[in-house]
Amino acid sequence: MQTRLAFPSDLPPVRERLREVFGPQKPGQRLDPVSELIKAMLSVRTYDEVTWSAFVRLRAAYPDWKALACAEPWQIAPMIDPVTFSEQKARQLPTLIRVILIQAGEMSLDFLGEMPADEAMAWLTRLPGVGVKVAAATLNFSTLAGRALVVDTHTHRVARRLGLTARNGDAREAQASLSAMVPADWSSEDLFELHWLMKPHGQSICTHFDPACDLCALRDACPRVGVAQDQERSVTPFTPTRVPR
Image (cartoon, rainbow, N blue to C red):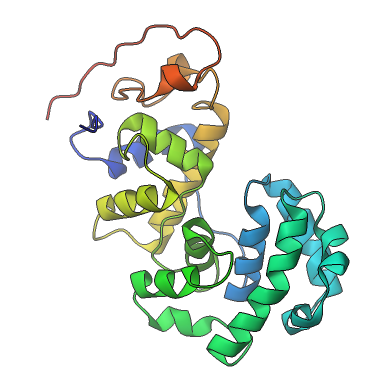
């Protein structure tokens, strides 16, 4: 049985408490959907600053993304290094561009804005090398401003420890379960903000090893699912105070 978060409801109080720590998070300048898709693919298992540097180099070399369709992996790999799996991504990108041109008929994904979010997610995840995190980032972070929640490694870990997702679920299951909890009146910007609150929380407080539970804004409601198993060293006993329903 899945341990549940102790809040009366799930995502709104998580957002409110983390907002008190990190402040409101609003989108800045958005990329077009194809550019965001490419950047999101580069970002897999890679730090944001490394991703941005690689993306800028790649964009400078290929101002028209269609040219990537004819590029050789050996030409792309040095530009995107040191992103994680750079050689694999260098092989995937030309194929991805060719498939988009075939499926969409042009170098544009703007048509996805006319689809319901679940259909747009399904279309994107059928592309080679595109998983749910990359698909959601393409929809939510780009000029499409789609109603999709991005669940990366950090947001997944935080959600799992809070009992919002299954303890042993994969990224697709986590994205589906969290998306099902999103209030009907939340906009794409609300989902953007939730991601950019949970991610730094996972990077700075709810880290993989030795999370700083005593500093956590969610500590009174967190069941700490799997924390002891994740840690390398001993865990300080922590008993959350349950919030009445």
